[in-house]
Image (cartoon, rainbow over all chains, first blue to last red; front, side, top):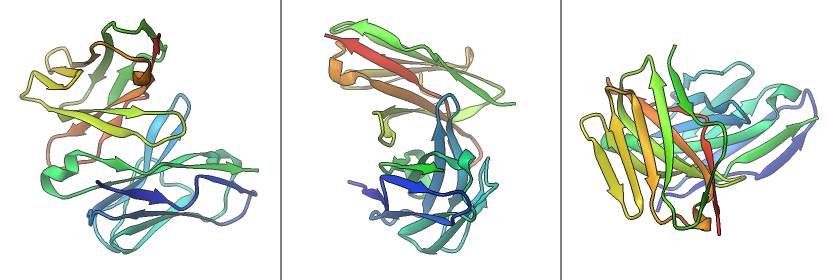
Length: 114
Length: 113
């Protein structure tokens, strides 16, 4: 079974703080994704990575950056947290070829920015 | 622009009945359509995938149909149980090799005992 873990389930930060969210997967998947999920807006893609050190912007990258130094680890960074970044953050992974057809999600991190 | 529509209102049904959820899309030609289940406070879990050349797919009590003419997918849960209560998301994947899904907002299903 694919296991995708996220560093925190709940996080409270102050405006202006730098925030790191980490995602680790144990299935040797090439593709990793960061989404945020807000009521009424659904899942929106922030960034994704198809290989180590590679990254691509998703639909809403502003205010975020990512890092993929190792294949199993994909970090989302909020350079200067703002209240409008309060959200549920979900990491997902997918393999190559036909395995890309299925995404495996982590449990999510609920971030509150005060 | 691309649009995926799922009923925003919760679907309430009685245990034992068949639940049917709808996913409509516009300005999109998906190669694949997926359905996920999401429980409160948890990440989505993949349930089923159907390809554009498939009309129907089944897995245990689940059935998915895909009508590319109507631009619609129906997701059925037969003999529904209270444990099936969750939010169900549809997601579309484009043709052309990009496996980046676009998700609908989900429909909440509540199965009453």
